Image (cartoon, rainbow over all chains, first blue to last red; front, side):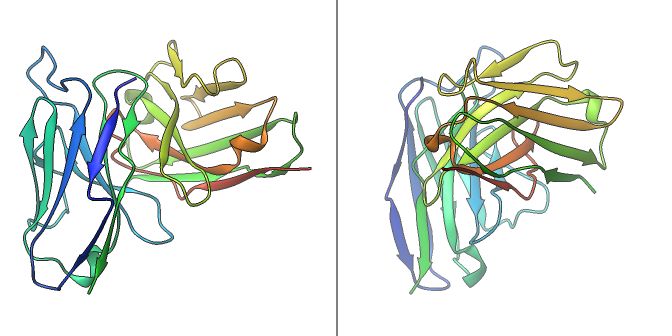
Length: 112
Length: 115
């Protein structure tokens, strides 16, 4: 199985400041079709996860442009340009290049 | 609007069985793969099972293979997860989710395996 490792596991951010979460995979997520099968989700308290970023760097419709994804191969980053109170929750990365789909451990983001 | 409405779940004894359902609307259900993902209390996300659009191919995590069966009824726009030989470590909130990208999720349903 592909191991997904997120850092940090928790983050406390002042509103209006940027935040960054790293995700590393144990194998390359670049498929022969040219797509990179790395996804980012946010799970707000008491809610199901919601998709933020698909295929490494594509923002899902309706997601704020404060969120951006980047990276390649095995190293990926989710960036929040200016954290807002509504961004609190646990962020997960996930790979979907092979089964089983696997998730990172999650990064809990809190507001200072 | 895409909606995934889950039902089923509840308390079951170890060794027992349970069936979860996920009713889909707002998209062409028969055109998309579907998945089940679970989350044990206070833990992270674990992909459990997936099924292609036609239902002809199914996939499972090692932890549930041979005990869980995923299926779908495209005429009813409904996804199912039949769970048997349930164990305490199957206790979790179970979510259905659409497509390879898991772009939409159901509200989740709690399955508790306990005597």
